[in-house]
Amino acid sequence: AQSVTQLDSQVPVFEEAPVELRCNYSSSVSVYLFWYVQYPNQGLQLLLKYLSGSTLVKGINGFEAEFNKSQTSFHLRKPSVHISDTAEYFCAVSEVNAGNMLTFGGGTRLMVKP
Amino acid sequence: GAVVSQHPSWVICKSGTSVKIECRSLDFQATTMFWYRQFPKQSLMLMATSNEGSKATYEQGVEKDKFLINHASLTLSTLTVTSAHPEDSSFYICSARAGGVGELFFGEGSRLTVL
Image (cartoon, rainbow over all chains, first blue to last red; front, side, top):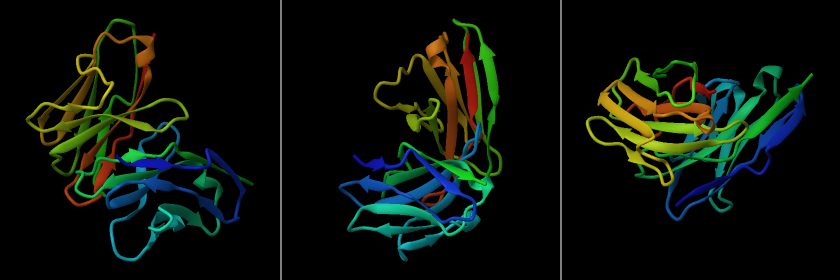
């Protein structure tokens, strides 16, 4: 079975500063990796996903993530954050051939301050 | 992207009553839908996998008689919380597979408060 660890439960950052949200996973088989964003009282929106190919994945809203197989990581980055990026971010993993069944990390609350 | 809609978005009910939450795929057919539960400031926990035309597959620890799931059509899955109690209060979210790898779309969520 796979597991996902998001090391930081909260990340405060000033507006226009860069940010990195960390995600590490554990699995005995190949996986697909995802980052989702959740705004208060809303569902999840897909930011980006890694299925195969280039390890650097670009998503919406200026976010990108890099898959590092040797470190089993999939950290999310943005070079300059906005107030509107304040939200909860979830890293998720799905084992290949598992039918899109996702396992989520505990979430990281990004708090962007003016 | 594809759209998944949940209804109601917010529901308050008395203890002992049953509540039904609907999850619809608006512009695609979903043979598989997933139901999650989210407690405040916590992650999503998969409750069950709903397959059109067959019985749902429940995760360990989830009471199938308490959380009834019906996936009667390719665009609708329902979650019924039977004999609800205050501890069932939570945010329930559904997702649906649109076909491709990783193509999983989420509903807006339904917040249940049991008094």
